[in-house]
Length: 199
Length: 200
Image 1 (spheres, rainbow over the protein chains, first blue to last red):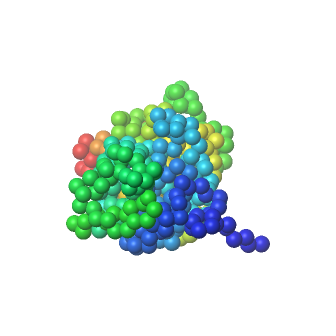
Image 2: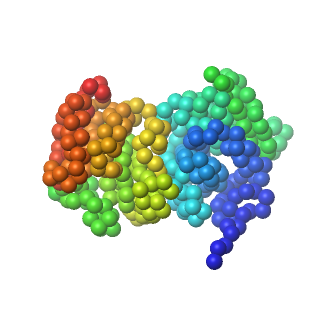
Image 3: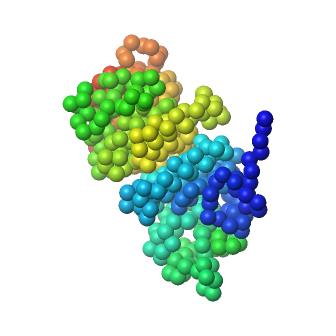
């Protein structure tokens, strides 16, 4: 008997996968992946329990590529040491048969990022540490590994008047985007998609 | 064997001979190699299958706080064994030993997934994929690029009895051509050291 995977109403994510993404975030990430160059891998920083990983892996499966996920995944020294986020993410992706197209990389962009080639990825999603320091590190990393003309989405970017505004982090994201010549390509909810310069 | 492995435990029962296809000599050689990784930290392997060598690599990576990257087709639809549950089984072995946070399972091969890695990013690489004279040079060229100068590269199933026609000849030809030197051998695994400055 075939049973359709139940989906969370209005979010585009299977019910069994937990992601701290609202409907607008999901739609924005889907927009980005639909505009990502065919045949390129994608990457994300900050996976937690795998909601955004599912979206990237689903595209990677269609493309026969990979979605690389960098997260501290509960390692010693992580923000949440001992957290079973890697096991939960793998199980969730396995449950919907996208696990082969997702690469779970334990660490931070500062620890593992230098092992990746330049211009390797068509798009990236940043949802790591929400501080000015991590915004700088993660965006600098993405500027190097995402191909010219590719896309980078940043999560939890809210106006100052909004209660969800993260002081310091938000300003650093805008400042770093300007410095790296990224232009805003799409926005909905708290997720902003930036397009890298063509050169 | 145990005195050579030192602080590392041997392969756990669930990940040993039955599924890992590694003999005691193979384990000895791999343990020798993984213990000698320098400050670059991370290691890699090509050809993971059910995860025996991945457990070894991840044990060493965990002891030093690094990662062991495992490239394998892992049952991808276009692979030699489509839908083979090797990724799930490898994951289970790693998870059972609490090593999953020190292993990275990458589905693909060196010509697809391997492109993502920069030059000189691994301290040691283990090659155990297709044992053919066509595939061995491709895997070895990748290892030569991603391993650090003076790093270590090992290959499996060098039995010297011709059971994989052309494979061992292809390997030894490139070892000589690229100036790799044999650093250790046990079982059917040979460990080679790359020259200083990487590509000779």
